[in-house]
Image 1 (cartoon, rainbow, N blue to C red):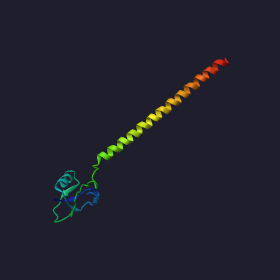
Image 2: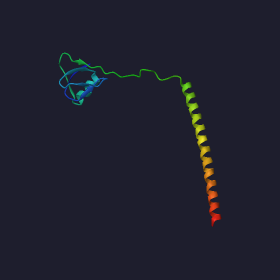
Image 3: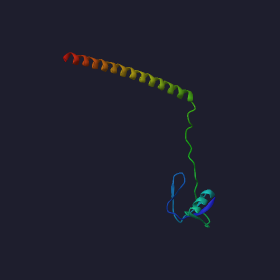
Image 4: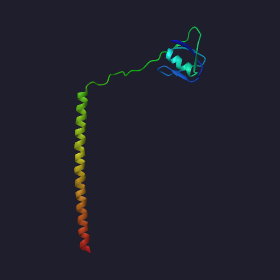
Amino acid sequence: MALVKVLAANIFAGASFQKLEAGQSYDVNDAVAEKWIASGKAEKSTEKKGEKLVFEVATPSAPASSDTKALQDQIDALTKAAEEAEAAHAEAIAEVTKRAEEAEAALAAATKKDK
């Protein structure tokens, strides 16, 4: 751990992005201290103590589902339902197209008779 005095007014640290005050000393990880000093945001401090900052990494609270068989069954069922719906739509479109072609043929025949 290294004790640094913050020089910049726009440093945020920690898991909750706590805003650090310029002029205050903080006890931080050596790697973090080196980065801040190199970028000019902080300087090494000789004060006896400073506020200790802990950098945490959040982890997921619940593990991913390991029941892949049930999920795959759901995917298969939904895929089958989608394929059936697509087939029904294609059938309906074919029927409407057939009726439209018959109507056009009847119109053409009626137009020919009138001439």
